Amino acid sequence: MQLFYTDVFVLPLPPGHRFPMEKYARLRQALLASGEFSAADFQVPPAASDEELARAHAPDYIARVVDGRLDEKAQKAIGFPWSAQMVERSRRSAGATLAACRAALRDGVAANLAGGTHHAFADHGEGFCVFNDAAVAARAMQAEGRADRVLIVDCDVHQGNGTAAILCGDERSFTFSIHGARNYPFAKENSDLDIELPDRCGDQAYLLQLRHGLDTALDLARPDLVIYLAGADPYHDDRLGRLALTFDGLRERDRMVLTGCHERELPVAIAMAGGYARNIDDTVAIHATTIRLAHRLFRDFGCHS
Image 1 (spheres, rainbow, N blue to C red):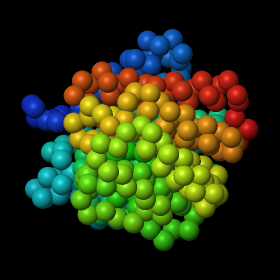
Image 2 (tube, one colour; image 1 turned 90 degrees about the horizontal axis):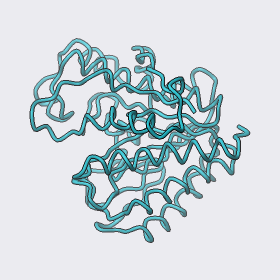
Image 3 (spheres, rainbow, N blue to C red; image 1 turned 30 degrees about the horizontal axis):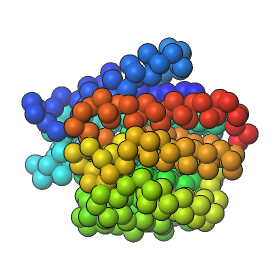
């Protein structure tokens, strides 16, 4: 299983910034320490090119990001101060999902150990998201003739509003988002399928809704490739989550999504999306469980895609 990482591209943040940038390096370290992966499984991805980004983003927006011409309002919406390192990391994060999709189509499953930047719109960024890696990757796989139909399963606690907006009306891409009804973003977009959950929703109710939504999305999308945003933020002790899933509930969520794809012989590219637990070790453990479960499932049973 190929794992693409970008934690070597450090985004400088001011002291006290609430984004847990260190989780990415710690996730890679945890996976290496697990003994389930060799050093050869970890790859630094190439940066997404302007051409690849422009399939999902306005050329003027790309140029403003790259050249450092984002105004104060645009930077505030993203939540990161502009820097050359921000540009490089954002390109690499999108490139990691591109690489994970190509590897998944070959091997059955692969992962970006970051990514899931689903709040980025075609012409602006929001919510710690600069470029929308899932939309960029979906369009790239279609342009390259690798996959005709792509399903994005977004299990981050926040709606994938940017993804929904970019891919709206695209008959070859299907967006499914299951998220907190009262959480950010407060002005929602229309995914192809949205499931909104009340605050403090726990394991049982979440999994029941996910089962229904996943079956519906798979049936309607008829995908050649699934991009799975496995956010850790539905966790009950997440600072930004407002749902109440346990470790066991999140593990079962992952099992449900991955098994549902595996049974249909569908390749899966995984991105990490959000995770803001009060104890960063909890976020890392949730993300690591997702990757290890995917590795075991596709290794033990094989993938016929």
